[in-house]
Length: 439
Image 1: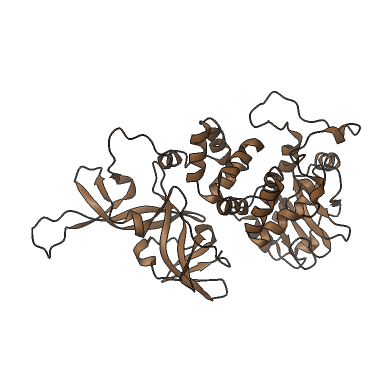
Image 2: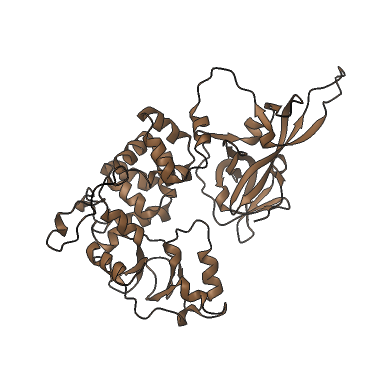
């Protein structure tokens, strides 16, 4: 992404293009969320598509901002834009606000704000373009302008006001998802729900993945169907399947129908497996490439910032197609082995010949033994036609092994995998109805 500082007002009207160069819409506004001790974080843009429909474009789907155009990673979700709690529209709500400068030089109004990339895929407001009050009574005169860092500004608030959920969310902005989940669990129930409403979809998805199942269900049941589906879209498919399995069948079907078709298909597929099998534990989003892909291409895929470390430890090599269920599974290439070979080496020559995949109905006990015996962090899962359908990672197995309430207790022992008692072990997906089948 470009690191050029861009002023929000100049983005309005800019064309948005997909990777093929086709124009999909134009920018109408920029969405941000407030944080403490840092400028507001950009979460996305409001884009107008043909038919005058306004939709949301996540900043994570933007690969380039500059030269009067926006480039995205792919298709835009055409669901009509609805502003979430905690989100602030720069053009509609932020510009024109009165602020005070910390240096004591007085007050001013915000006329524009600059957004800047501060990390891979992370943008925030770093600077404001301000106009001070007029110094003359002339109706044609305007006050002087000044640039200021966002951290040098203070928005005026009344004394004695209680901290809003928006302010509370801002104070949690720098917490890791697991820490934020714990902080929310310490809040009164109503306050926790207010904070959940204020979080962006992707942030709430990350937090829900770190919460006990009862709290996950309570929060999701308080969200309207559209918002709940948006949050599930942002979750890992296996975590979304876990959560939907704990809802009523009617609500689960409703949310699956509202989810993005590709995400919903992954979740339905996972729900077709028994909970204590490799299929019930796996994720359907490993890195998959052809045998002709090079080491350089593989390392580039592993570098993606949104990729979980366990999924980045190895790359799956298959015949086409390259989306689960793939063509015939050929093998896995470990990250460390790629580092030992030149960038132009073909991954098909680096496949680990000792690593055998497991079937979707392989027991969780057997999967755990394979991971432990061969010091692996993931194991591939194939169907009866030897097509790759997913991978089970070490964190999936740990989540299964630990007690159901492990997030709130630390003195219980992990579940036993004694072959004589495995069937009686309660699992994180034990509530899933076997009658659902493939739903």
